[in-house]
Length: 190
Image (cartoon, rainbow, N blue to C red; front, side, top):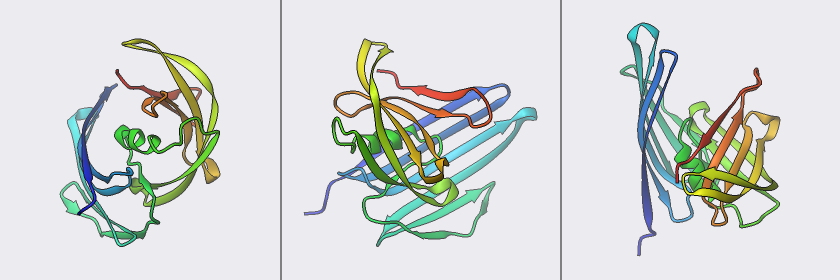
């Protein structure tokens, strides 16, 4: 019997100050949340109606990530990178990848380490999640009890906070802006 595979599809849209991003993608995962395939189409628009388009195809097999990009209609040289078993995927702007990988945190854990593959930079990162407390978050359903975890990769190239509910579902995440006092906070609708 073949192992179960699941597909997660997402559409993303961001518009602010003349800059826009529109993306759609599909991620295929194993039952444990580790990736099999990721396909994404992303269009970025800037001032003066200039647009750029990028297609991403990422496939995982035999301990490797096979990555191909087509940027502005030009195919970039493919990359093959070693990826250890149990590695999760986290592509830029793909909040659904965070929802998948956070469901693997053991309930109530104080500290947990995950391997994350970040295809946009061709990087494999060890990321440590540390429980920083319990909080109540306001959602469309009212207040929800949440556990907050801070996370950081070695060297802090990836860091932030995530809030999950008792079942491990992602409720909110935050990435600090290293050069300003502002941070990017994403709250998922419930």
